[in-house]
Image (cartoon, rainbow, N blue to C red):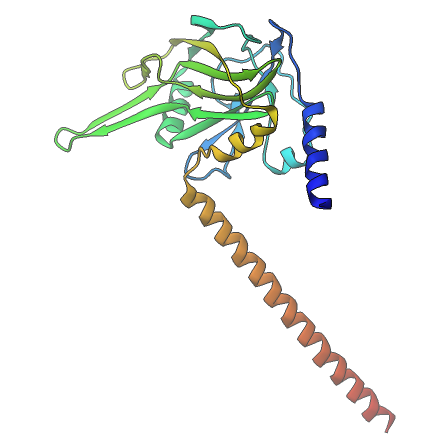
Length: 258
């Protein structure tokens, strides 16, 4: 009964702390991190890539948990307003890529880099680009960059319940034949979806949607379990050695007194 009451109190507290928006209010989108898909613990700041960024980068204050999770949140140029659709796609920025920028983007796409944004404390993820491999003779190798991001946002009343993004609404830009200086136009669109789901359902939605393959999660869990086992064994060895040495010292002291 006590556990049930605690859960109810936590749910009420979470609902009270939830962000509430008026129609047309700005919904902040923070850029966070990028990294290789098959190694989600190797991450870098999103703005280390040659992408759209404000003239002055403002970082978000992070909690200890966010710091330990490798978060590096900073404000973005996305101008999203509560319950205001953006269609057709709106320009985010135009940027001119140098030879080094093109090489960096190509390498990131070939390493299957994903990116993570945070919208109303909901992590949304997508791939930086698309790598197309096919054929043997001749071999087909295309490195393509997604330049449009489409935001799907679910809301109930004045609260955001869930969000995700898609990059496939527009054709990607082929970087194979790109020659510096190369101008790219980045765009975004937004679609708001009403839902009957409550704010209390939000954690289940976020946790139930896994961007990374389950095999990676199991892999890291097995590593953690192995490390715990190693530390336990080391602890037992230290305790045994301490007792043995203590007995030896006691015996030597007794012999010296004799």
